[in-house]
Length: 166
Image: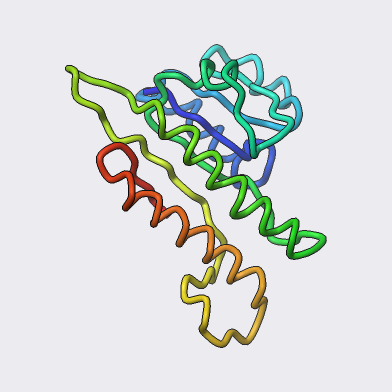
């Protein structure tokens, strides 16, 4: 199975990458990254690192690199952002842009399309109910909850080709 991984330079994503490299059922990994990965993992033959300048736009060359992938593990983001606009851009806009771009090329098996799986590594205590009163980290929790809501809505709209796990 070919997998796309975003966020592989972070704490969670780095561990996800290590686990993917060790898993024999994963034959190929395309890591989308803002910067090069350490040589200790970058030289692995299962791994192709693609440097991405803009996570809102996926040019044809990048889509060709990920062609045939059956899943994406999205661990891009961090708990502390400089402001809410940046947090929303990284957590919601980048995530949804990727889901839409990657889900267009669903892997095909025996002429029948398989659902593309998008695994979203959200944040602790993310709140999907955007009207709920929150006592701590209100903005962060709502932004992560909004990302979850948007991904779930996208999955409902494309249920024949796309599924998401949060």
